[in-house]
Amino acid sequence: MVKIFDSIYVNNGQKIVLDLKNITPKGYTEKYRRKLFCSTEGCNAKLSFVAKSGNRSYLRTWRYNLHSKHCPHFLDKEEGEMGSRRTNVQIGVVYGDQMNRSQKEAFELEVLSEEERVKRLENKSRHKNKRKLTRGRRTSEQLTIHMILDPSKLTEDFPKLKARLYKRDVDTLKKSDLGQARMLIGRIQSVEYSARNVIVRIFKNDTYMNVKFEEAFFASAPTYINMFPYIQRFSEENDSVIFCATGEVRKNMENDEFELIVFNKEGLLIHGMTLPSLVASYATQQLSF
Image 1 (cartoon, rainbow, N blue to C red):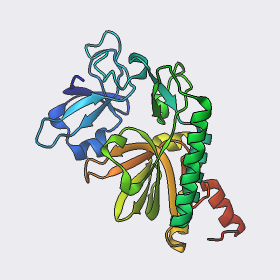
Image 2: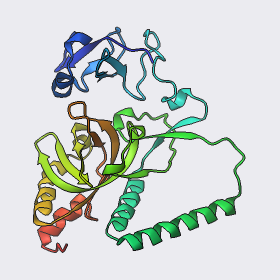
Image 3: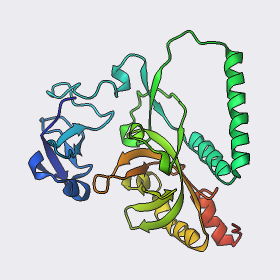
Image 4: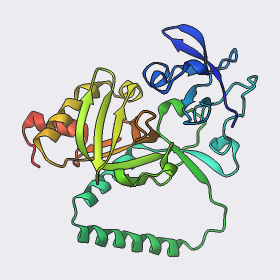
């Protein structure tokens, strides 16, 4: 991957050439994030800032984002990450029904006793192995599918492929999960919200992280911004509220924690309830914990 050291900062219709030396981790998070583009004329590839401790920081092209063909950075993207440019690698999409099933299953497991949980997982494993034996061994080469959630990374020519959506507890995330679509399980510690974004802080076994709902989420679900206070209210009125969310795993450059970015309204479950269901339960006073 070719490292990039200058960019165009676009804000409110104004374009400013921005050198890498003028970007700090804090400044990128607060001001430049999602507003940096390739400096080559006519190229609209989006760039992100990569802070390196002890090494020179750099800019890189967004995952699944291409430079224009006349740009010197065209195809500098990690070809291993671009499904359309690597043999046997395809781009897959996580659908809403897939998120719903995964989150519901995670919640049901979370409320079981340890003995019941082990028994259910063993039964599921036996069922899966039985299916494999029934199908027989596959002789064709398998596809590697990169699953994506961010609608800004989707185009009409992406194949409609589905793959397994991996579940993770907050305290089991690893570096290999970065940039991947994951379904996370934790308990709510706090909820912060404003007119443009929401942060739900969750934890498990003394490991904490933020689940973020930003502009991309509310662009597709604008009415949800008024619903998040109900999550805060529910978590304050009840102990150990289980929170399941599906999104893209990233790293917070300021505190080195993992964080999850949710893009889809189907990508959250609050103690077994969707957000509209939680709001409706308060409206009808039918909540029971």
